[in-house]
Image (cartoon, rainbow, N blue to C red; front, side, top):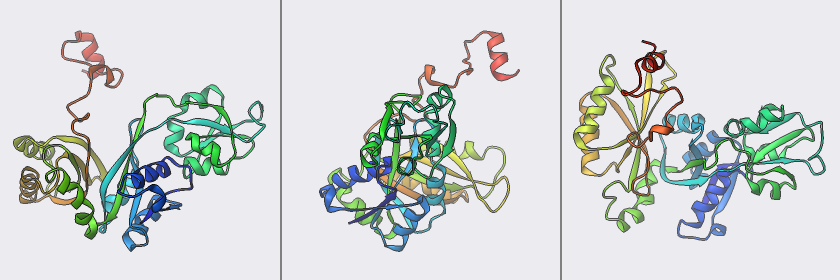
Length: 322
């Protein structure tokens, strides 16, 4: 099996591809892992059949959705997600050998999401952030005046010296990766799992759906979410992406608990189609039951400055700009 991923070797996506291949019914060494330069190249390889599967990052618990991955999936007629891998993410800081005490270190380099997760380290050392195409590429191409952020594997692969470990701003960060295949091969990819778990009953599956309301205006999202509520389908995420062709028009990417073939989800999709919405399933994949969603946020995890009904009047006025 040929598995394309965002390279070069040593990226978190490489680790995710290795983990998926190792658990996909064959040892990791039996899968040919092929690093590619961009997310688009991974999608194109899967779409053309040059790769049997592709692995791309889709969401960071710190930085949110990975926009190039999301847009490529929304825009692709031939590629869908059929599985996911979730990794705990921690960044080490690397320098060229012999430069750990170098006063000439002036820049920090990593993928933009990596830089965004290590802002405290960058600020404390007065470094200039320099984005790279991937964390591994930053480590591979590291200059003597730079510090690179990446997984521990990068130091081993590229012969680097570790300046510091665990330099991320938030300990316990996780990143979700999607495993992609051609749309016409999705049913075969799902078949073993569907047979093993009784065809995906309950919340053991998750579906990503692109929904474009044809008629917009007040109450559109209320109508949509009402259809979810009426059928007891849990929406775990809702994001919007511009349609590209017209200003102020959007496609909504909804993630929900359930599989497209489950009766309650089929009924939901039929209701949305009946209301005139344009739909496309972007992927479905098995997940562990439960987990956080739109209804599972703890009060101490909300954005700083948020208010609650029981707060004092002056606090409410400040938070809501009344």
